[in-house]
View 1 (tube, rainbow, N blue to C red):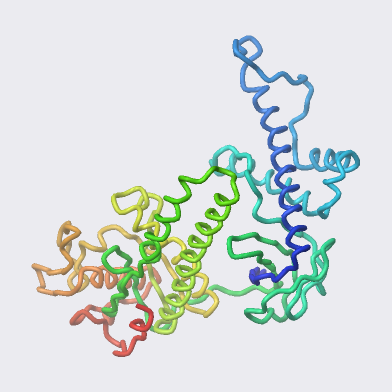
View 2 (tube, rainbow, N blue to C red; view 1 turned 120 degrees about the horizontal axis):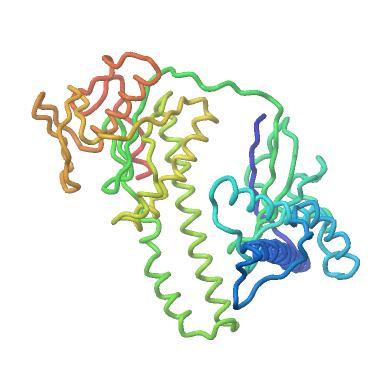
Length: 405
């Protein structure tokens, strides 16, 4: 089964925008009410009967069942007859809001996530069941709303089945995310062709095993001054006022611009790497620990986790083998003689092996170690990939990465 998401920007009318805002507000009320009901039930059973709090305690009947997705859906059907605003959104949209709340509790129980929180605003609503003719060229038909124009930034996939639609509100407008599925099994990409190791860092965004260094664009730093000025002006506005809301919108648009620029660059870089190799190896890194270090701000700005996810998807889409290898001692191992050279300071950017005399950039040497570990992991010999003069054998001089630096 193959699942793909296609995102398009909507061009709704003024009345349709009001409808979107109303639906999002109703979904927020349903979510918060259902969460309040679940939270009251949990609080009423936190303490033993003989050790209740002396200050306050939630009292519910002892036979009250735990609120679940199905019980709250039944209660929603009854509430629709009492509250007319609940009849405005599509019933499946409200039920999907309750399903998302149930998924949040399952993630808390099984995956160690925190307790679900009340929402100040909802940013999306979902149609879980849609018709196949709901999408046409340049427009999409949303149940109980009608046809909405959209910008066809790329063609629709052929042969896929439309499964659901999600309307998302962002600072730059409303978007629709179309989920398509294809009932076909795609085998894993086998290892073949020219391998490429990728090492990431803070001095350079990444280094490849063939000696290429890619500079890190200042995604956040480039607009940091503009954000600082807007946030300084926001501090002197009355919260909730018209000017306060306008500044909030401007700040959100700047953040959206940073996110879009970074993601676009990640996709272009991933395609460039796939143009040059048939197998890509990277380090298996815990980026949560990286973000808590001294360079946490720069690490979060680089968004290495997002880039690795995009790179793995592009490799799968283009038939390039992708594998994560052990990250330990990649910067301390000589790629030529496999000798452990010892710990290096961050200011030391050149790898010099005292055993064999091999010298190259520190990040390039780490990338060469990564590609050697990857080749060993797939059971191939690594003699033909020994480092030589900072560039592995079999690489053409024109790599093309200089175009995206």
